[in-house]
Length: 419
Image (cartoon, rainbow, N blue to C red; front, top):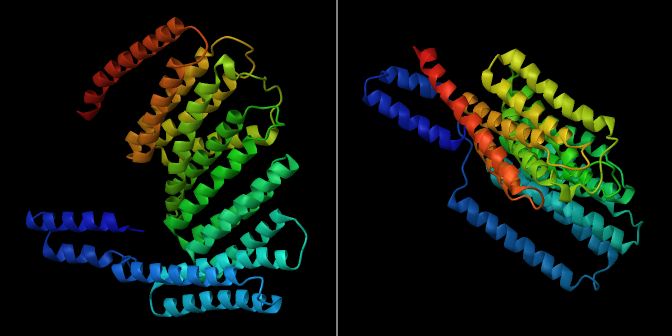
């Protein structure tokens, strides 16, 4: 639960508080006794061992590649299986020796060799050319290895292979590939079972390529930014709901997912402000898939449900930010011409709400994402390719005046609330 940087800061604070007489030595000992042990760090010996292992593996692969055509097929298969057995055997040995980092690395190498074995067996025996199916087999094997060994590296290999499999299916069939969601949820359950921030980061990152690939289908009659807006809303809203749960595992996973959700929301706001210009309106989205709209609405519902549970103003502002981004994405959809001032205003308000949410909840990623979103939206409005620069300057001036008036009102209100 506690990372190394936080523990170092906590130790420094405890020592200072003891020196200042704020806490007694007995209290200091009691606090330190309740802290869980830190995970082993990566020292110089482990780094050298990792480099040595990679060099040996590279030498082995180079030797095999140089003599690949001269090696009989059965011997090739035996070498591939031997490579996996050696990798997982070393992983078990390192695990018993209490070297979890090296054990994790060995499990990841075993998962990589498994993928190479699938490709080489298909090449040797001229099997069917379903490359995406091979990637699915690789992903399932790596996920099984991750579940059995607890390896974060194997989970990363599984998610990478699954992303390639899903993207290939999307562009092969020209349709959204929903099967990836089942694999992603299985990986998410594994991350929750491990209670691992690293695994939560991997799962969060894996969701982004699927949404992007699904939004870039050329045959679709809706804008890519519209789909990305609904995806960001679902990711951020569900993350806020997880973070509001009373269970520590889901709370930690939600805090990790919310970081990616906040930056995704800011990126979508910038993209919407950029594509709202007439130059990018090549077609009008008249029909949007119901599942896409439902995803965005679910994100809003999750965020407001978390607000009702926690009764925190920061969560409420985050929910409002999600809703405003969706409103901004929908406002200019039916417009054949003209500049969407209401959409611009909604996106600016959304990013401001995101900053306020981060400040109230002390969530620095939301603050950074909100400020980046504000800067990107203002830049998109100012430097649009087509349209009246005078009108844009008037709009920005009015928005600035409204912000100053709001700041003045808040400045009058906040001191009273503190008294």
